[in-house]
Length: 308
Image (spheres, rainbow, N blue to C red):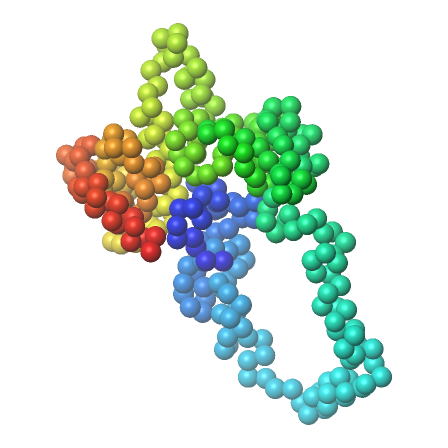
């Protein structure tokens, strides 16, 4: 599959920094290079081609340079010319086309799996003890829940419901609480999103005077995590000269600083986008500090051109 270009498409994937792979539902993807067109794409470990057209082109096609003999062609033609065969009748072909599609399929559930909606009878008994649930007005078989940030009713997908259930069951692999959100904006403006359990405990103890966790630290935490994702995808465009990162070497820098983004209420997905990333020497990055090299309007223009 193609590498996602916009942040909304990239939000569906979870990046593993140690294994350098991306997870979506039950699938694992790696950044691969196609053997035919030499373009980067999302694929599994053993995948070598980005599309069926590349895998079946020229020398990569198993039938490249081969032809069927006259005897084999005659056998195939005679097989389909037999009018008495039931496999050659129009009725049988129409039966095959409509037998296992849509409502005729024995596993048909109203198109829920295709649209990634959640059935009420399946998931409501598992989550109604902690979340507010109701049936959808248009289709009562579909589950609706309340957004954790804005409180609006919406139809969640199966991945978000599954992550929330894993946290409620006490799975130690999930650092955050995996709350349910209706949109990306609610995730960005919610203080509990992308926050680990340790930071949540610290923030609860602010009243005692032991910790001082401000909103800027939470904003910076979200931006840094999304910056790592974008850098792994667009490393070739950001680091064209293959500079080495580290101490006394080069640093990954935000052109429009994170500090100014927090003060001007700019969304984290805009600050962490690859159009706002550059490589600077350590000395230059220290001199720059929290200063921005571009204005707020220039940042929005770059991001608008990216979406076009």
